[in-house]
Amino acid sequence: MPSGKICGLTVKDVRFPTSLEQHGSDAMHTDPDYSAAYVIIETDSGMRGFGLTFTVGRGTEIVVCAVEALRPLVLGKSLDEITADFRSFYRLLTSDGQMRWVGPEKGVIHLATAAVLNAVWDLWARAEGKPVWKLLVDMEPEKLVSCIDFRYISDALTEEEALDILHKGQEGKQQREEDMLREGYPAYTTSCAWLGYTDQQLTQLCSKALADGWTAFKVKVGAELDDDIRRCRLIRQMIGPEKFLMIDANQRWDVGEAVAWVTHLSEFQPLWVEEPTSPDDILGHAHISKALAPLGIGVASGEQCHNRVMFKQFLQASALQFVQIDSCRVGSVNENLAILIMASKFNVPVCPHAGGVGLCELVQHLILFDYICVSTSLDKRMCEYVDHLHEHFKNPTLIRNAHYMPPVVPGFSSEMVESSVDKHTYPHGEVWRSMNQL
Ligand SMILES: C[C@H](O)[C@@H](O)[C@@H](O)[C@H](O)C(=O)O
Ligand SMILES: [Mg+2]
Image (tube, helix red, strand yellow):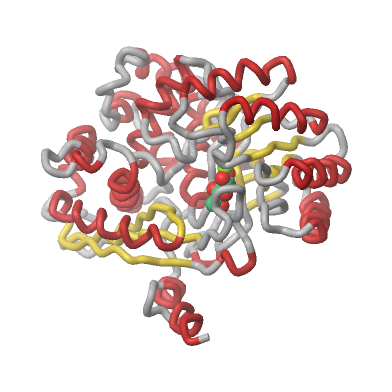
């Protein structure tokens, strides 16, 4: 079907009161209401694309404003025009002469870019009748590279190098695609050990997760050392010495404090410590990485890493050992392609971030593509999974034996259930109206 011109873009402020039960809580976000700026684009030929960016509670209204500000750049464009030269469209959104001052390519405006571009990728995949991961897998390396803006990264990754990596990734891809369709992509769970959960909840959720076949578990840390020791001990005792345990401090510490704190927790043998300090402190992460290497603990980061430029520097500085891409923080598939290919060049495994609403749905497409066409390896690789709010998506993730099973429905798995959106729209949706009356 001809896709037509984009003639409408609506954005909704959708919030879920997850803080009531402490789902998603960590050392810095103690009361997160998982939320999304949810974008629907429409074409004059009657097609629709759905995109979102993840955010938390009150911040959502600012992201919604930023999406509105991008609307004039999108209206009137046709999908064919955009995809014929996606790099230029990406630049149009990120380099607008009056808008870039509020970024560039960082913070709220970049979250808005992510939401809009995610909707465009959803539209493209629907027009092609494929899920996004398959659209990418079937795409020629030249076409993939034409979606990437190499400005600011060509000193670390040239277009030719990217092409070369992608060409190498074509070899054996058929087999890897079959492997994924059969086995799925390995996942780990964060849902057992949010910071606000009691020890009793931890125990219950962990034993259920073990029974369901999970083999890797992330624990929130960073508020009180004694609590961390007790909680890590509890989980390590339950999962035994072989399974993976990861710890996540959500930026709570200074650099020196991070090294000291994690040293205290090293007896529990975490595979990585995530976001030990400010997400902007590349050299700080490099220092922590170096200090923790002898303990066999890696550093992971990325969920609040602004853009490909910062990922470049993290990689150049050997500042992290696990790259955590996020489907909604940077400029959608376009910028994540750049990050995946850079990670491959620097030989650092990608273990995506997915702790939020919709993040699992979207990022599974990217990591499937990474395995099939870029990294070609599962070594030290797994994708985060959180077991919250999937019921609000038309095509929720499918987990089988702790693996993400590849989505089959065309698009980015980003479309939400209409009644869920209505109920959770802030502040007039039923859920919020009834809470405000309490
Ligand atoms: C506020 C959120 O739940 C975060 O705690 C979450 O994204 C987390 O950092 C994660 O790694 O999943
Ligand atoms: Mg995290």
